Image 1 (cartoon, protein in one colour):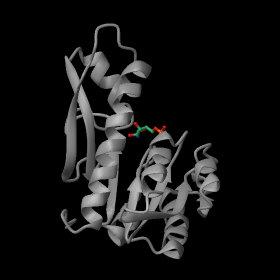
Image 2: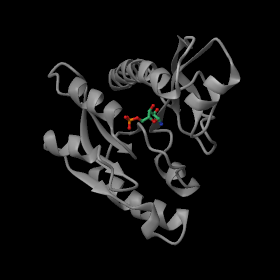
Image 3: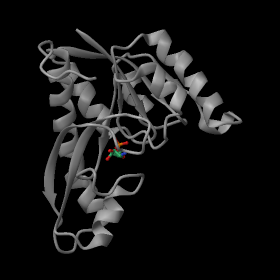
Image 4: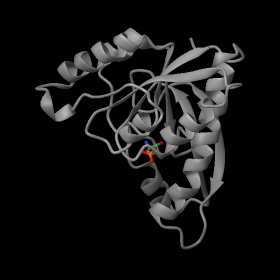
Length: 192
Ligand code: GRF
């Protein structure tokens, strides 16, 4: 059984989908902790599943590194085999990445390396491209630059707004994430 910690910043709809998948007795991973960099509404999903959660508010720390160390304390306590960033809108400091890599993966609402960063959906829409996508990557020291573990193309439809496009991307992100974690748990996919 793979023990997974999930980090979020917002609504946690991707977290919720993962919690639902992990609730299946046949799924080879379980969520052992949910954390956020703010008082994220998505932490309520952990409560509903009886899973420990924590908030390490970025605004409460003088530096990114100090925030990262406080976050690392919480992560060490849950001793995860894998850390999933699913809607964490914060770059992890190098020290935390160095401590937990390569066991950190991230979902991104674009077809990396296209449109990295915090506004992947908006940037894809603004580019006029006919398609974008969803990706699951391994987290390295860069911004969405790690090895791509899974990705899938998604068409951009005429009249799409950032919201309508993101609403079509998220289900694909969730499906890719659930499959990537299963493959890691079953030894089909090695992180290195
Ligand atoms: C997801 O698309 C994630 O990839 C991006 O922000 C969104 C988070 O959505 N970083 P939610 O908080 O899971 O609803």
